[in-house]
Image (tube, rainbow, N blue to C red; front, side, top):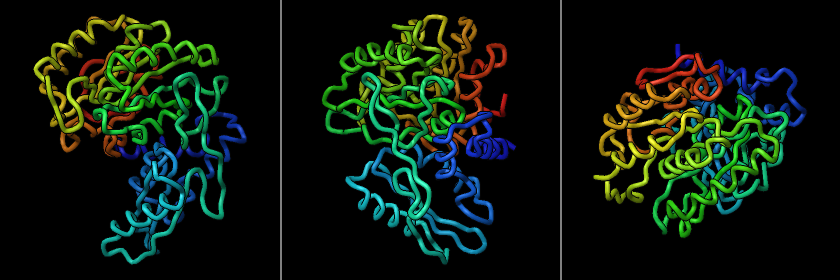
Length: 362
């Protein structure tokens, strides 16, 4: 049932029915990324979600390769952040071919950047707003037409690991389909200390309101999620909600350290958030940077009772596990409804407390 609900969300969003009068730019965008473009018979949920949600979070240069046989069985591969479009297409084709297995079908380039070869295309979202840059493949409606704007921050892997090409997770594309513009807070790894990049994030928030956005969401993975909560604590007047997936500020990529302080620091982090912005925190079993997800869930449950603003802890059951599990399509297909409700539902209808089960539409 939950997969049917998410499939309907995809169909509604990609048809443009989520808004009564989509602009010509949005209609063109929907044509490029429509489920109907995947052909007959109707694509599987995973194929539709991989193209309609996951691929759109990529950073250019991007390409999506697809193979389908007459019975509708399929294989695909996609990449982002390649050196140039030619390399992106070659890498996507290679990934598609590796996934063919026994499927008797030919991999072909189905999309490249924001267009389909021989078909419709739309320009990539380019430029920046303050210290934030537009997510290139996601639809930009502008402050007057959008529901609001989400600023997404990637994680931190140490001074030698550049995360500026890491895609936004698929559930961000679903937020985009529901009216949210998306900006990225990308940081150079050599200048991404927690208290070095935080002032830039906070200083950029007024520009979002000045541009005309009525609502502002902050979100992020790992260090990006931790920073989002810190920024909302400093400027709760400028932030309506925070989505933090596997928030962490202890350790580097494959080098967890100082984890003994992680839970106590997380408790202080939550205590510092005023009762204004809504808050969703996603926790996972097997997270190398979270020594005690059960304890963190309990802390969030306590804060949900204390705060008037909706406060939610998503703690998925396995097989969703590990520090980067929010990027798994299964997370979006199972739990995105909770995040949409947390940021969009009237206060009385917004989810609260700890939730491990799948989410519906309310």
